[in-house]
Length: 223
View 1 (spheres, rainbow, N blue to C red):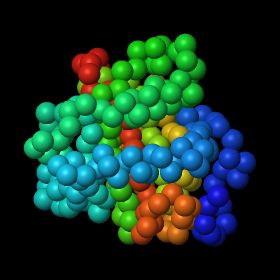
View 2: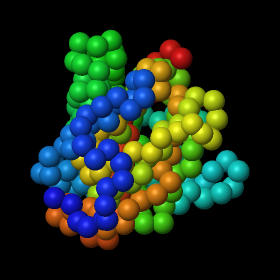
View 3: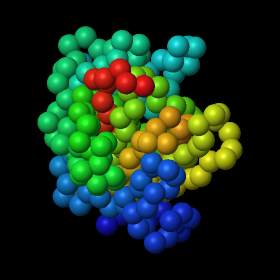
View 4: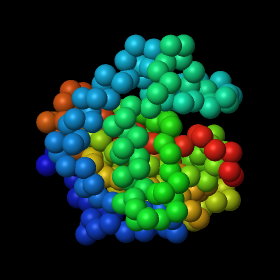
């Protein structure tokens, strides 16, 4: 299913597991056909005023990752595009709810309460990285649903206090689901490396790279 990328270094059994309290990794959550459909849809969603851009940070630096926001945005979020659709694509809303249900159970309080409003789409080429950060733009405790497409990345999940150790590294491959909420909702996390050439050519990503879609709720002020 996937192209060559050298030996696997992490989670050789590829079983669904809780990697930290409230952080659940489900390998191969999406089938190849579902991944292909999502890549094609993302190409349409991330066009026009919602096209992917290198965003400028408050300090003046420019992110190596390209990104855009679909659906409801945040007043202080820096990705602002005139004419950007305010409605979250229905497909992503459905995936968001399904992801929380898969991670915690469909009758869990998180799955029952989750009302996705927003998706951040990030594109990583072979040289792109994401530094350690906390997702603080949302005011409520709802979990983050992360879906990976294309090249494998190393995802680093850290602690709640700072960017340094302790942290752990996990391989996220195309089709993998990662949900982090509960005790891990405010954990520092980042992507220190992308393994170029590991994505399946049939996904339709001509130049390779990794697409990461994170579905979240910005609706409630419940933190």
